[in-house]
Every structure is written in C-alpha cells, then in structure tokens.
Length: 125
Image (cartoon, rainbow, N blue to C red):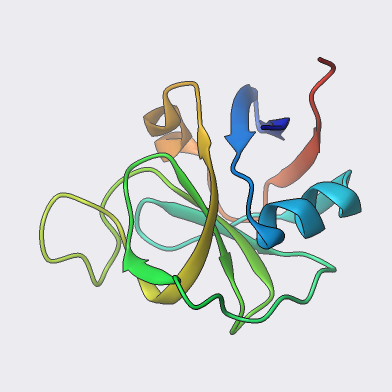
C-alpha cells in the first residue's frame, strides 16, 4: 500500500491508499493541487484525472475515507456528516470509488474553509 500526504491550511495528514485501480491512477498523477470546496463535513476538489465509476462504488462511507467522485472528477475527503447523511456517518452525493483512508484524525479538517489551497503528494517512505 502507498502513502500520501494531504496538506491543507495548517494541517498535514497522512493517508494510505488501497490497491485499487483508482488509487493507482491518482498516485501516478501526484502531486496534485487544488482549491477546497466543502459540503458538510466533506472536502472535495477537482483533479486532472478521469476515472470511471468502479463497480464497487458506494455512497455511504466511513469517516476518514478518500473517495473519487467520477461525476465531477473530484478527490473527496470525508470526515463527518454531509447534507445527505441519514445517520452520523458521511454519505456522498452519489457513489464514489473509495481508494484510501486518512491515517491521522480527519475531524481536524472541520475548520478548513472553501477556497483554501490543498496539495496531495507522495509520502517519503
């Protein structure tokens, strides 16, 4: 499994990618920079990677999940409830390809606002 670093605002979080095709394509494109958009307790931003929705894509995800939203070519970081959540867990607007998980406490991202610069890079192993 490969590790990445998410740098946004004053935070640096480590995340681990799974062995999916989505994870491989995103890892190969790193580093990626973007501008944060928030949707409840989710950060998402456009990335220059186009991937089809995976057969195992899901809308209900765990806190800390990294998802790729094929409908918007977006990298998503889930850290709590979203506007369409029905319980305490995050729910994407539509199914996402889950490709990794934040290893640090993702709830610290609650203070990050729209418009912040975000960088995703490979972790130095």
